[in-house]
Length: 285
Image (cartoon, rainbow, N blue to C red; front, side, top):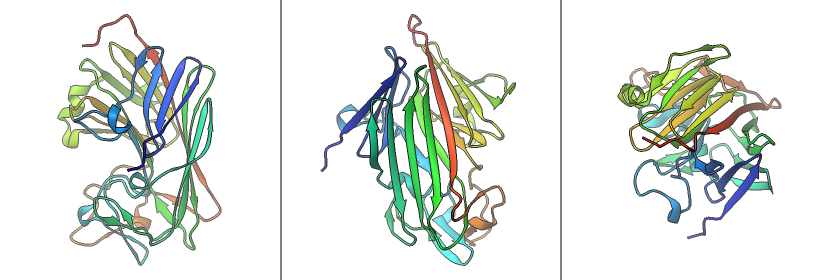
């Protein structure tokens, strides 16, 4: 088995560490306060229970469909929950003290080993970067490029998981219009352990140990917490595929009007910025 090498970047008092084997950000610290769930860390630093990832990219779908069956026009596809990207390797193309860039290239029809064999009818390149500025803010950038002979619709999402603290609360919204505080217990008790906030580009997660502020350009947000020590705060371009399939017919991705077009020669860029505010003197409860 190949060793799991890591890369550390830092700036403005914030430190971020990535597992280069799976391409996942698994540590994000400001001062002595750690906010990331370490499920994607190298094996000797990974928790024995809970989600065995720290963050994934969701593409070209968000959610799952019965029997994993899809179409792009007349071209058939098979994809597990959240698509192909989460099961593919990332190539490290740039590393410096405050920035890491990676890419992932998929060729139409190529079989990807997910929970079951998966494939997609389009070709694409994903490029992602993690950068820390002088204020310690982490910016995640995802660029999507269509390399196909066809245009296709897509959904995309970033799925980072933060440490769950029992007294944690969340608010979500856009600009000055925000929700009332929501307890993590409310998320855990929601259907599927998920709450969705459409047209939300801002999420604030507050605990007795830290506050995480996320602002993004994806379009909507969802939050997932199963009571396993982590809470996922996910920028998404479209809601989950759940309940969209009728009967045994596969879902036609190009017929999903809330999915965005990824056209040849017209890359799409999405961003999320994460700021951390520690409360180092407080006790975690």
